[in-house]
Length: 256
Image 1 (cartoon, rainbow, N blue to C red):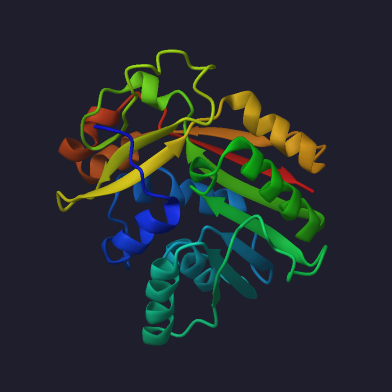
Image 2 (cartoon, one colour; image 1 turned 135 degrees about the vertical axis):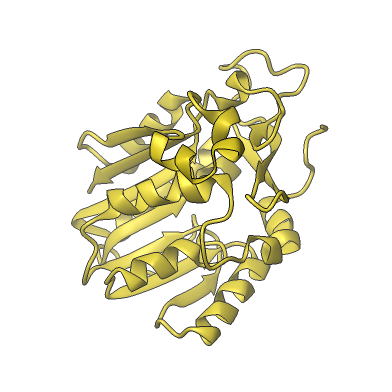
């Protein structure tokens, strides 16, 4: 597989309908998003900003779970259109905007209780991620929390390009450290047998921690390496079997 030349906006404008769902469908709907939601608790009566909200899957879970206000922002107009269609079908009072996650000037400083970013930073360079995290720190109230998830940085080096989830290294990508900010194309499968195109702009573990520090976060983050658990495997043993024992995602929660 050659590197995907599409930007994140182009990728998701083209695939927004394939991402639309009302129940878990792709690998990460089972292995990542439920864990991220648990890391967000308690969020009842909180104001929530969902950065890189996509078609609103997590935003809807947070709102149904009692969040007082949910604002979703995504760079893809196609994804925002899909989110707004679902909001029209089932009104939950979620606001969606098309915009850049690193440009949050219209949001008041210190007015948000919880910021969530599920698989946003794997589409940003290190510099863009650093800018975004500074904005996150600005909009969070003191004591507010930032929860985000990314593909595990080691995943491309641990899995061959095989279903149901992978990122493919190029022939010149053998060095984990020298490939910072290189973009790897990948795919993630849904249980119905269809696949979705995804991308990873590679960053190391220390890149994420340095960006948090540079944004002004000073507490120790809670870190989870997400994987296929026995409970997840029991849902569909054949589908999840190739991923058992592999670190798939990295999730972090940190207080402002």
